[in-house]
Length: 186
Length: 412
Image (cartoon, rainbow over all chains, first blue to last red; front, side, top):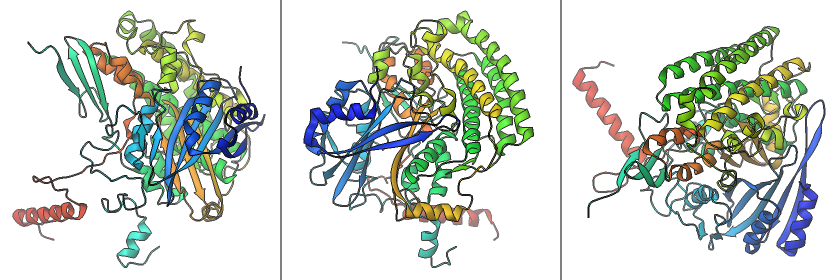
């Protein structure tokens, strides 16, 4: 038994009410000879209600976690969680994308590893790449970075905690390098 | 009291591993009582590089994320980009793309089957399967010009068209592999030694596979009917109703072990042959690129803001790219890649607990790990513990080269 994107959203709305600040259904047409469509639900939510939103999704059906990511956009870090509900059914997977901002002076989130064991990998990655602490995450060892990685350096950050001073060319375009050397670009 | 447990490190460099990763096991006799997996030995920071480049450069950079599934990442990238930018690929391109992706699945699955034969100590079987793999690599080379890193896809289509001669080669290949898979079923699935070595090893029950967030053939071997080509189809896959290959449909029961994983992969090769056949039989005529001028394409990207998730079913499982275009630069402002092994490695800790030391290579290999999808960051320190920066190391290297030149009398 699967639900449509609208039915899933109605269930979430009923449970969460004002915690959903903004939402959008994105519809995509796929196929050439028999075009059909599927929908995704993109929601901006209140950061304080994050755990409740995730718990509600798990109540509807056991989801698949696509990814957790975050972007440093200045004053805040924008977190994005993407779940897929009703995967295992043809044409029925509904991706639910949760977005919320975390202020840089309060980079703490509750863990979701109690609901989904496999999310440990994702949370450990976000922790070392963006410096976000996960409340209740048991294994806090580095995932991709070496164990002797300097403290307070987070590769995805674009502020003073970033790694621009640790690398040389990899983050620059050929054009930038040429310009720095005073050569003609192009 | 005498010591009862011993520490067995495997990797990052180890004959049983094709790519660097470290498994640290604590063993009591033959039994593993504690496991820790360390990854990150091949992390190159590709997402970071991609966010500084334009979308076309990033597309071909994404091809280099993985050495084996070098079409899966570009596929997820173009699907995500097309969704975000509102570009639709022409019908002919939508049929050519799955052909290349399925050819890749065939070569990747045969590669894995060879590797698993090698891991259980059956090397003549490795050579036999890899000999069979050459055929699909030849076809890929004929169509794209390369055995790997095909540079075939473009946002809004493909770069090369299929000719009559390619289609003929594809048909010959399909006949060849229908025979070859029958042979493989015989030598792997019906072989008592192979069965004894893989039955019950690396067993993951269905509910555990869900909790560990497993994907691809690893999840399907555990009985989960998940497949991106079925759940959220795209391109020609949307026309043909792909069904996930699961053991319960083949033999009527699921055990979720390395034997089931082998079975799922062999039957998926046959499914790929059907998909390729469908695509060449129904190949529409027409253009292959929505926006043939790359400058115009980059200009469109520069003016469009949007974000989307692009997903493709790679040979190892779901590969997801999240892309955000902010409408100010011609490349993605945020790019996040999740490769299948990222999730599938979660199963190692679970499978190894209570297993035997000799099972480690099988458990490690059964998910078909692709560790290219992780970064290497080297922090170099001198003897006092001070961190050395890049320019210092570079200066030292130049000095050493000069000294060597002088010593050997190299003339410039």
